[in-house]
Length: 197
Figure 1 (cartoon, rainbow, N blue to C red):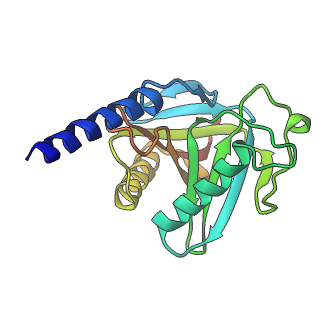
Figure 2 (figure 1 turned 30 degrees about the horizontal axis):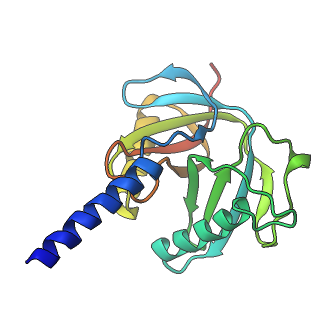
């Protein structure tokens, strides 16, 4: 009984340290955008161009693919590049999925120009500019599994149909938290729209 209690106390302390070090209190740079209109249940944002690192995998399993893609991108920013240069993590992480592949993207810190960035060791990683423009955004909290993401995509799709906005891009999930964050979890579904103002 004493051993079990010690294990629980030690585990709780380790979890607390991880949370304090890497949890929702940790401040990371976030991708910039401007809110241009607040609708009843969603908002319209303008995203300026950003530099992103992206990787795709043939669709096998959403969770497995996400873990693999995350590891490949994390390796790049943690020094897995020709210059062995470390790049700070930012938020959010972009995730897209269709019938053939899963795609993940990291937004790279705003301080970089394209010419400043090191070449990835993994040649499947693509360094590119994001698509500048107007995006509809539906925010939600909590953990986001595939089912919940699909529900939120459908919710945003219906809201856009009701309000008359024309969709011009794919629905993309944005995640802001580390996997071990248990409170204050933030998520977005965004999609590019024709916003005539």
